[in-house]
Figure 1 (tube, rainbow, N blue to C red):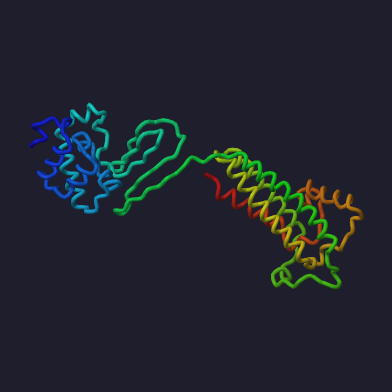
Figure 2: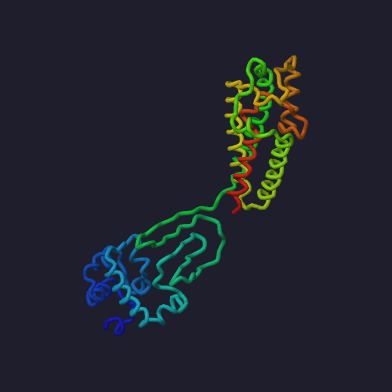
Length: 316
């Protein structure tokens, strides 16, 4: 054959076109030789991945397989040329899955065995291309930027929202409906179950435990900045909506066991001091904070649900 008689490194596009015709692939001469100007070296390093993926994107599976068989024969005849170009017997010239990184070279998967290129740094975008069920899929992933300025803004946001929540709780406490005029709303479940005095305190203990677990997880997580800003953003937004709901709707006290009535704090300075006490005590009875009017819009439920979600879903 011509490939044996003439050094393949000197093949031009015309030689490749002649070889393709000899192998029965005349239909691809224009695409490979005229449009993409494949010479001998390019032909020798051609892979099934190249044939399936852009810019070639051959559509006929039989032609792809037969062309690869011919190319592999050619590669076998010119092992010395491949070796000189840096290919070894461990490389996979017919790879189907490759991930190319701008700073890491190429990672290949051949017959279920991964082969890695340069082991450079992990900075930069990563483009990966795969074949699944005969279809080509391209995935682009990028290194997650901590963006500390966003984390700082979200922390300030939740800080302000918590302060605003404390002020709203003071206002709501002043507007608690009289229990004699507006008795607690009937509840089929709670009216049928004996009251557990320590249940509320236990809920706060569970919240504290979840908070400790969350802080440990945050400390050990590689994307701690991203998780923290997401937590602050979601928590702040939910509490802000809770403030609006509490302010707009005044519901009756949820139970007769609660000694709640509208309470006036006097001047604005007294209200501010009360709001500061609620804010510094995190609104918890464990810290001595006692409020009324916000039971139907439980901040404890918000905190426990959010902490549980982040602890269970953000472990990796």
